[in-house]
Length: 194
Image (tube, rainbow, N blue to C red; front, side):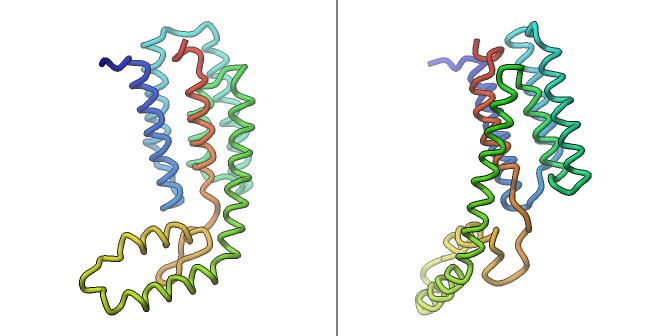
């Protein structure tokens, strides 16, 4: 079984987007190397598939999204990493897919905001549950390592704040929404999957 170079490239893009989402969830930061990697992978896609006739449209989509994102960043609506990730993914868009990409990003962001509200309301229950888990685990702690369960619970409740310990990152990890829409976008990118 051979893997087509285009499919390998798409798998790399998806992996980079998943890394961006996880980084935003746990650190509320999207490293610059993520956006640079996506731009580099776009260049690799051009080499594999040839330069599309509408390359200027791709560049205009990226420039327009970056300009709008920059305006939102100056008002504190989006983080800098979110803006760079949006622009890097908009480079993959053409006139037929940019609207869908932006709409899916907004819809996924709305879902994230709703989850954030639910977790904020559920925080007292999560804290109670965690305290009960700790009390039940105390006698057997020597034989069972519950760190993995605690990390999962802490990650789940990070939007609502930590159960104990240092303050969790604030805000909604909008990189998750951008990554979800970005995965849709690359799977619908006509110049890579012709």
